[in-house]
Length: 465
Image 1 (cartoon, rainbow, N blue to C red):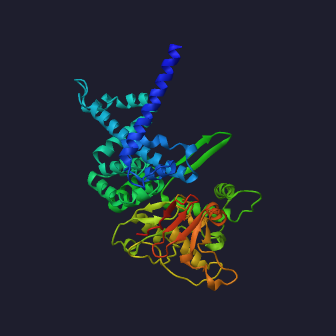
Image 2 (tube, helix red, strand yellow):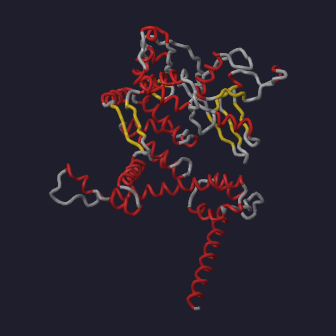
């Protein structure tokens, strides 16, 4: 019985201490006399989602219990927890950077030369054991921490404020590793204000473009070096399958993908999905298909590789990056190689000088004309749902304001300003789910989605600059 009494006392003391900690934290986060202070769990979730994380906010997190939150409150709670996760990861990065520095405090044993000094650093093994990580993962964590502390303090600050995720911070260090410190800082500063609005994938793509812009010569040198390393890849997989492909220049990969898609469109369905037809088309093109003289002279449908490149880059005045559809930023030399290749067709695109958004108007009909369709696909580049990267050419063209079939003049015109690209999933969600709504700003091209909870999410148009 005394043991049981002791356990109960301990439990009660722990609960009282936790309650006292939460009470102190909530007092520091609010003014007891302010009628707008949060009271309910939902109100606390909303406030914590919008507040920079720290010790006092972390102490309040236990109030965010799922059973006490509405659906809207749970979304806010997720955002609050994610911000605090980033804050904790920033603190962890500081510890890791300090551990890395400790390894060199005493230096290697006497007699070791410079070529073996790195072998003296056993921090990776310590971290791997302490955190139950593989050696590779532990080494990567240490590298990211060291880079954030020494080269990217502004990015580290955004992480500590919960404005970006750890994967975004890691992406900055990884992408910029090929740059000298001055250029790396230039790239970081160019994107710093945009990072809080981006997903990790968008961050990586923006970094790739900015790196090519900031260091065009280096980007071309790295491309040529990687080009010399091109190779076939063939990996066995489970259940009698294999992964087969090649590591090759992006423009060649785009041309091959376009050729496969073109050939797949000629194959009968026979119960096959699009992806199954594409795989079968690839096999057919390589193993079975021979190109006759009539096909090589134009009897076969032309595969299209779309590269968007500014005129000054095209004529060699600057070496800013171009954009290869389906891949992302490529070097100016790659773009010029595609542009001046035999059989290339040029189409003029007019962009806004301030936003970089594609701008143009076309006649209206219910079914978009081919020109309108090309324009909207080129303008949006991807599905306009914020986290979706489905290529625009594989999306539906949807009317933002529904087309008025009874009286087309009354609204919902089939103009680029009222059309956006949506993958089939997000098209169905926007059309049939009563809680989701979409608006598009024709001036900025930004689409704003409103979720059933009332939260809003924005997606910005592709910037052709």
